[in-house]
Image (tube, rainbow, N blue to C red; front, side, top):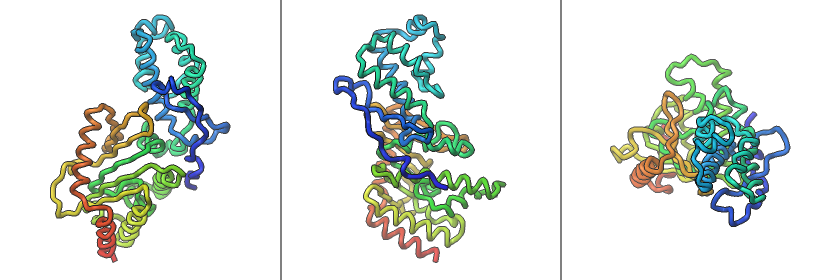
Length: 319
């Protein structure tokens, strides 16, 4: 069974005083049940780490001094500020607020609420057997805009079940049917972000080479291409095809995804999928470089309307 899209709907936000807006974005109330939450605890942990580092700096304290006062190892605080923790301790966060002299009740409540949210379960935890810790879906869930380039495969967020199954079986890999079904189910669950009331903007640039491969056979490919065309008619989804005739371009060497978030407290990041696992780049220069590469390849691609017409032509080739 796929993850219900209801799990992705927004919940009512806390109201944070405007004077504290520079420190923390409005936090969502944690759900009252044990179900996966509609936001991304992973993004919340990332935001909490950045916020705690900023509060320490605002207090004019060195990390070693904070660790000494709390009788912690210096590495503990370093891990917290680098987002290298699994589940934040609400007690530890409260102790840090005391050391940093944060006395404003509203700000304290907001930071502690953020720590609690960071401890919740994301929907992807139902697929621990599929997704590694810190995988792409943990960030897709809360992204406001996703820009993806793919040269050899259809982006996961646009794949049909049959195409995804063929990908997982590809290369002669020995994988049983149950595992394939499980991976396909997880991939379809990722796509539920498009069924929310507030879906992210998704901009995909796909090289024609990805649409010409006979993944799963002609019928699977024809239906896959028609599915891409259908998804591209949604107001929040743009698809651009780079025809083979365009030749080399700036993003030819590797696929990547750029994720943007709704608040400045959550900086953009880049995901690069590798054989060894997921690689995330957060440095401003790295994000800028990939953004420039995306803009370049997007400029080399067909327009949205021309891409739709070309997709129809490509689908006909598989009849």
